[in-house]
Length: 104
Length: 104
Image 1 (cartoon, rainbow over the protein chains, first blue to last red):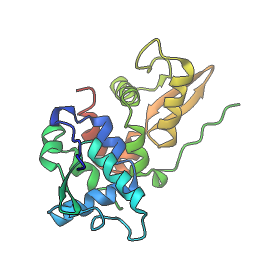
Image 2: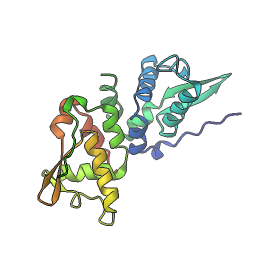
Image 3: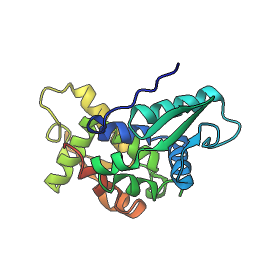
């Protein structure tokens, strides 16, 4: 069974968050997850339908390792949600300040 | 004569800024430049005195390419200043939101 590793809130670093969001596709994934307000499967949150599965799952891994998203196995799907509370507790105002400029 | 290339304000990208700041040393350099409120030579803005010159100039290049700093040749020195007005015009609130969490 696949186990996903998520950093603890206190281990989320500013550099890690900025690095994970320094990619247009990952910014779009986070925006899509937040807009949905619910957890989404990887393919439902994909920024473009033609993206290769391996590319997509790599983006999700980077976001997960940085502490930006939580992934849980649900049946055959992986469900993803943004760790908004953790990120906002750790770096108040940061996520909002970044995302308001994403996709301009 | 060395010519430094700086992106135009409109060419500064969110991803580029986030990527450039996703490194603790580069965050410290930008903070040091802003704290000084004046332009600084590369060595004066170095986050640690023992940093190799090549490493340091690479950090400055990444910051310059992202549009975060302006470098000008002054005699034998390169003087650096944060392009605060450009970054704030392009992404209002972003730099402040990031830097307030840097070095925590």
